[in-house]
Every structure is written in structure tokens, then in C-alpha cells.
Length: 422
Image (cartoon, rainbow, N blue to C red):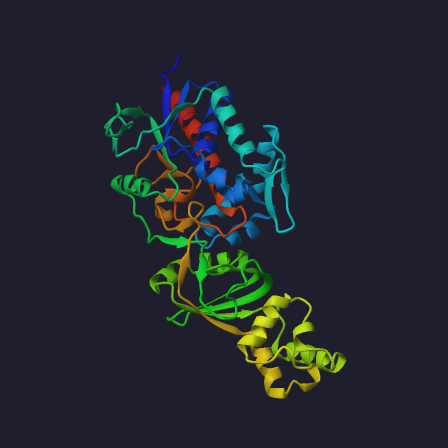
């Protein structure tokens, strides 16, 4: 019988578990003698899976056109195109269905387990780990990986016996430790910056209105004069603005915002893509139709009353005034405030544990046909440790599933090829 091959996966998160399980499935399918270990620095596995989507686990996105799907990655879209032709969102759904987990879409395209809880995904993974006898190694913070002359790897931790592996996958997410390991093995780490964050804004218009949501258009101008635009739901929070449109904007502008120390000018059109001319015409029509009504009681349909009254207050226009008595100057002020409210961004607010970071292992140093390092043969990468990040909506998990699946296929293929060469 061929010598047992040991594959060590550093990182017990989404990419690490998905790779380990698929390695084990492939090894059994091809009758290969393989031991798989998931090495985790803490005692907690699948932490981001547990908290993703408010504890529901946003598994992927309901978009099966790969060319359109990869457009949701500010960094990595070109590199992911080929891997996702091999394993995309539709394949993820089928994979989970095979394990008895139904994944269903919501109106915005996000996809969740039908149970509506991340526990379903976690329990499925832990069951498969047990079924395939995958070795879990908790409390093993890898401090050093040494490539030996015979091609194998020596994984060292401070308080534990070293681990010897034939192949190693680094799937440590955005933790510093993973980047340091990759760097010591010869890899370049690109500039890192927070991604998917909300904006800290202090302004009378949105003060004390947390929870109000708008289908808005936003335009952000950085001190460098670079402009970013986005359209979608915008949510007023206790500290400023959030919601899918804000999070997407933060992803596309992640590095530029870090460089500007999160200072920028933001214009918000609370009426979506309504132009100033359209807004003026609508307000003029409202004025003529509801001439005797008070401003505070009659307002453009999409707007919440609390927001409308606060807007009038900020503009120093009395809500007790009748529409008939609204003069041209006041009407223009309202138009301007509705279609181009200007705010100063004063900082960013990250979700405590559910944040995403751009930056990581330089993509040109990785072969995306196999996820193997071009610098250190036998070393593989998957997930967020790479300089790949997606916008909100399930795209970051799909990157984890796709890159982990590709690596799992490649590792077993290499083992088969090696056995044939003997």
C-alpha cells in the first residue's frame, strides 16, 4: 500500500473546512491513502460562518452567470473567472443539496440555508469531518512552517509537538498569522485595508433617526478627487450611514479610503435616481394638488415622515406652513436636500467580527488552476488570505468555496500523479 500522505490545512474557517472535506471525499473516491488535518490556533471553528448574515450564513449569491458574478469582486475578479467556471454558485448549491442542505434565495440575491440558521452549515461540516475521519487540531497556533529538502513541511507551534505534512494549505482568513507564514515562505503581501464597513457621519439631518432605510444613489469624492458611485439600500444608524450601498462603496474604495484616513465627501440622493428637474416637478405638482395641506403632513411618497420633518427643520422651513405658501427659494432648498444631501465622512465603523479585509497574498504568485504557490511547491492558498475580496451578498464565501474546492482537486491529482511516477 502506498505511503500515507498527510495534508495539513492551517485555519479552521470556511475555506479550511471546505477544502479538508473535499480532499477527504476525493481521496476516498480515488482510493488514495490520505490523512487530513485542520490545524486551528484557537478552540473555535467556523467562527465567521456562525455569525455571517446575522447568524443565518449567507452561503452564496443567486447569480449563475460567472462573468457577471466575478464583477462583484473589487480585487480578484480576473483571477477568479477560470476557477468559477469549474466551481461556481450553482455548484455550491448542488454540493450542499447532496449533503441534505437546501439553499434558497432571497429577493436581493443572497442565499441562505432553508433552516435560516448557520448552525445547519456548521453541523453539516462537523458531521462530514467525523464521517471522513478528518483530524481536528485545536489550540495549535502555527508560528513557523519550514519546507524540508524532501519537499515535505514542518509546522511548529510554541507549546505542541511539531506536525509533519506532505502538503499544506493556508486558509487563515484575514489573520496576521497567516500573512506572516506566507511571507516567510517567500510570498508578497499586498497593502491591507478594511473592506465592507459603514461610515461615521455626524449631521443634523440623520441625527436620532436610526433604522430608517432608503433606496438611494450615493456619490463619494475623496480628497484625491477620485469618485466612487453606488446605488441601493442606505440605512441610517446611530453613528452615521450603513446598508448594502454603503458597504459596496467601502469595498470598491477600500484602499483609497484608508489612504485618505477615511475622510471624504458624500452626496446622497434619497430618491434614488430622481433628477433635480424631476424632483422639482414632483414637488411643484404636490404644491398645486395639496395647496391647503401642511408641509409636515404631505411629502414625497418614498420618504418616511420623521425624515421629512427633520429635513424641513434643518432647512429652517416650518412644517406648519401650507404648501400654497412655499416660495420658490424654499422649494429649491428642498430639492437640493433630497437629491444631493452633502455629508462629511469622519471615519469608518467595522462590524466587530464579521468584517472583511482587502489585501493578502499577491495573486500573481499563485496558480489559480490549482491554488498552488508558484514560489513554494506543495503550498496552497484559499479564501481571504489571498488578495481577493467581494462586496456584500455571499461573494466572499463563494471565493472561499471555489478556491478551496480547486485546491482540494489539485492536491489529490498531485498525489495520484506522484503515485503513478513511482
